[in-house]
Each structure stands twice: as structure tokens, then as C-alpha cells.
Image (tube, rainbow, N blue to C red; front, side, top):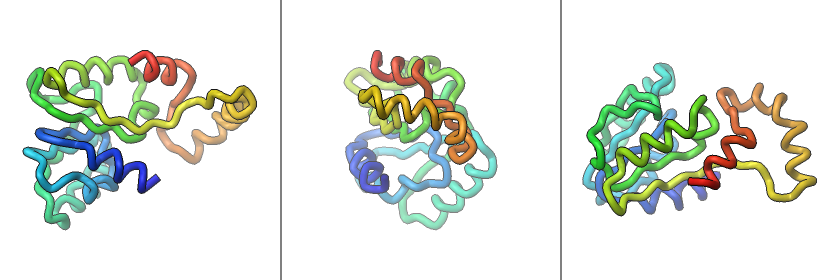
Length: 154
């Protein structure tokens, strides 16, 4: 997973926002030549750890207390938005994707890494059976068929 995150985040350019930055696992992987790096995290305990990670890092970044559904930035003000395992944690991924569209400049890019329902009927059946117990281990994860369809439609 670390390699996937590293490869994804390395594609960021310009003025970049990361949704739901958590404790800052991606911080070291952002390119050094970004115009600006903005990290959002709505959960106070995670945000506190994120702020500590930013202070320890040589990378300059701004941390915002903001949910993915309401980012306090102007329309068309970002070149890149990164979302790594965030859409499964929000109640309304459709609202988040509308917010992403609002924030991105023309030609801007959404870089995302999400876990989705398998194409294989057999594997998908196992995912369905494990969905409820998985939620105990993956706190906040609400990935379901509707989320998968929304991501595919976007």
C-alpha cells in the first residue's frame, strides 16, 4: 500500500490539496516542487498528529480543519487534489466529488486511491460477507456498492 500511495502522490503538481490526510502518511511522498501543499483533516486527534508530522517535516504545508464535503477555498483554485482511502469514510461521496469539481482549475487532476468491490463474482461475494466484520477493523469505512458505482461514474 505504501508503494501505491508513493506512486500516486508523486504525480501531484502545482497547488495541491490532500483530502483526509490523517496522520500524514503521504507527506514524505509529495514532490518537492509543489507550488503549495494544503492538507485537510476533520478529526481532531488525527489532525493533531498531522500537525506534528508537518512540524517534523522539512516540507512546508498548511493544515486545515475541514471535512471533504466543505473545503474553505475558492472555486477553481487547485491544480491537484489527492484522495487516498477517503471516499469510503464519508457519508456522501457524491457531495465530495462535487466539491472536488468546484475546487479544481480547468485541466486540474483528481488523484485517488480507493478500495472497491471486485469484478469477480466469487471475490465480490466474499467482500459482501466480510463487510460488516471489516467495519470493526477499518473504523469509518463505509465502502459499498453505491460508492463503487459513484467512483466508476466519475
